[in-house]
Length: 438
Image (cartoon, rainbow, N blue to C red; front, top):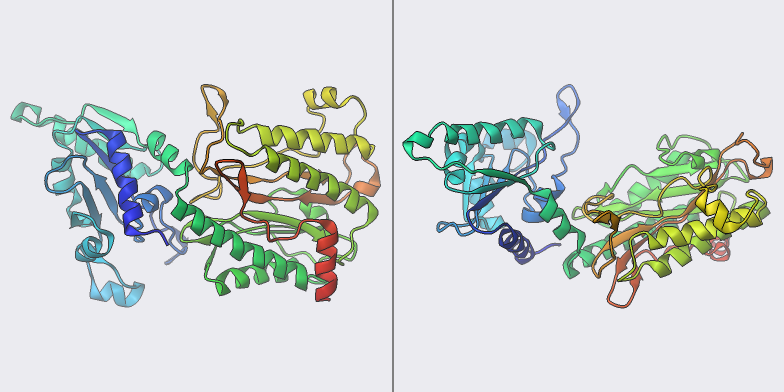
């Protein structure tokens, strides 16, 4: 769990970066209709979550550096016994102050009357346009209301600055508390992947594996998936974001699982590939071992001072070398890399930032150059090879083999720590685990 003190520290850091005479405004996520009069399960906006931990929709947080009567204000739904009987408990303004430490809390219905007064006299508004189109119109409406009152002495803000620029840079560097939560999410996810290896059998449906993953997540305290799980057997593994998860798994096929739990809002993201029947074929093992080599070498390059691109470059080099050794590509290694000849078989990057979003925020480039890795960054390392059936010029013995090996990495002072190391990825260890379970 993230403590109230941690949330307060984040708000303080953000307000220090904003400076006095500014105001930051962040709306919560909205509930989304699933069908007719039912909604999807609510998930809070990640920026809103990062600064408040407040779990309700129809809320707005306002930060006012230097405000005499308190810098942290929340607008939220009022207590309503009838609505709470139907839809669950609410904190209400009093509960928001008591449980979440805001200095002031007001009913969301009063925002039109109160927020323009909080904006008045502030030189800059920090706000992220585009994420909440309806709320964008409210922002401009309040600004225009103040502009219309200039002759009466009102002082409207003169500048609107994109809040995401500074807030997402903050989110990119994880605190010790965040890393602790992410380690736990990784452990829960790792246990689920191990359980999936242990129950997998030919003839079983992919959905059975998906259900096992969800059960293991929830049983260990992580109710939600961080994203829709990918459970892809055989040639389905050559579809990068396959989520149908409804095919019968065949003897002799590989199974690629890309799945992670969400814990306290933080994502894990693990991929493992293993044989449905517990034994790699010669071709499967050969391709797998090259992906594993790429995974290991990319992880070695994930260290402070290296550019963000270093793990990807290492993975591409090893995968291209493997494609040559397997007789799939022909030519000099350096030439093939320059020509991107590997791309029909490895078409994605080797990783992404990880945090409150599974593809977390933070720039990958600075001044048009790959960002330098720093202590506290968390990223995935996920090389793969995909040999789709009917690929022109590809020997049929490779058809239908899709492999990805993905780990979650935190950059440390001297290198990195692999948060997901407890899931087997050595082919002999995988076969031994599956044999023991059968």
